[in-house]
Image (cartoon, rainbow, N blue to C red; front, side, top):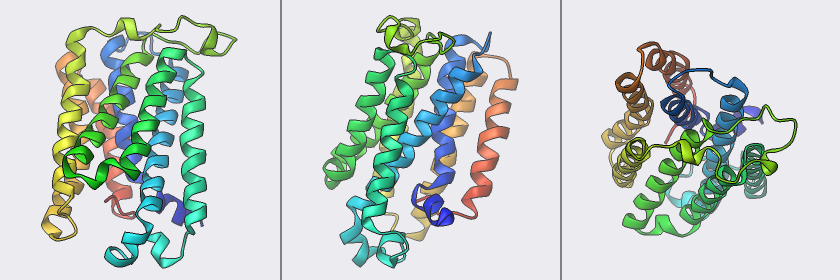
Length: 252
């Protein structure tokens, strides 16, 4: 059951979501006085929202997958549609609840991300353009979530509801918005390419490589904006585990 759960949520891919959080936080803080509790909770929230979105996507595709992808978990009967939906709900809700630990502004980003994920899974992906835009927006919001964390803290004995609403967002310089915008455009293009992966094994391999490219882009941003040990940390701690797990679990 645990193995099937990890397969359902595409566990290797969650490292790319965590990478966005690390990168966004470090770009704002410049690596100084890192609040590891903030980074860890932000990364966990991001990974849960990502995992919930992937599980919900499989639930939404359960009927078409029975014809086009009979080897996936739900058509095989290894995970029931009800359980997939429940897993998705728990992951999305847990990620959203964790975001409340910061402040309302950051929680609104997480809520918008969750709503966009749901919209993509059930509506947007039916059209090639809207599907690409939806995925790009989701990734951009995840990067914005990471950027906003640097101005927030969980060191307060109270939940973030009592903190200034947009504390954290004000720390984001306009120039740093190139990071979520770049990632959004990249994922938009990768999503359009992925629409043909079932028809061409080569495209499937390119899309898989493109998922690793998310962390590589993060490392490039960190290399440009700071000391070399931050991109090295991202590559060693996130890209390598993602690559190794990608040999065990399906990523696309």
